[in-house]
Image (cartoon, rainbow, N blue to C red; front, side, top):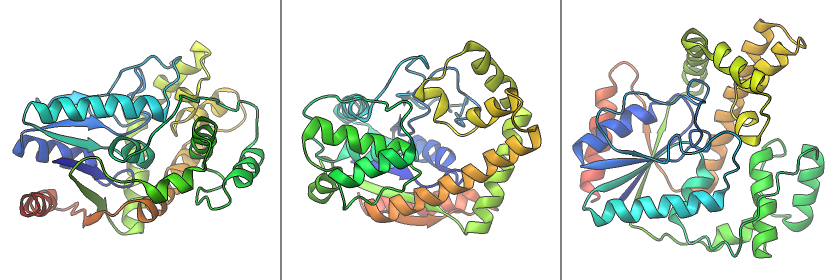
Length: 290
């Protein structure tokens, strides 16, 4: 059986996955598109303490490299098959829903399309997407998913929404989502951003800024592009910080929309006061459905 642990940012996915993996002889597979890359630790919220649990698909690539959903599908399935073959439990953890679906469902990419549409505005991209896929539920401002859908159409000759309607699971899978009230989530997100600065986010971003690298890997995570604006002298540090918090909150909202539309999740409310209760509740659900 494959276990998926997902949900918006700052709900405790990492802590839950480590606990479940330790109790179910599991290994963790990254399902966050930004944690694939090396050298981006703080902005992408990588956990340095793995608690002795085997982790896969973390820190794989240099930020100058491109990595597509097609690439992730191939790599994640190899990990899943290998872990299952060794009698262990694969646990996909992360908030990139498209990665999770590509790994577990019958998505058949005929070829690898990886146009990045550099210089094309979000409005132009969205208009192009609507022309080929009027049934899309992708938000206008979700540039990454719009580009993925355009690349999917180019590679497969049919709209991504059509494929979503026909997909089937390839593995026996339990889908678990962590959630909390919106005001609590937004508070936790703001706290996390403050902690990121304490841990050295400004220096991490400045090192990337000075490198001159402006690939999708660098410009996608929330945290770098906002500070790049500060380094350019266009906004103040206070404005950059608030922008990071605001965009993180908006991203969490988009994640909820996507999960509710695209995945049949069993939701569990995060108990921040006593997280062990959340862990026990999830573990009991997994055991009763295994």
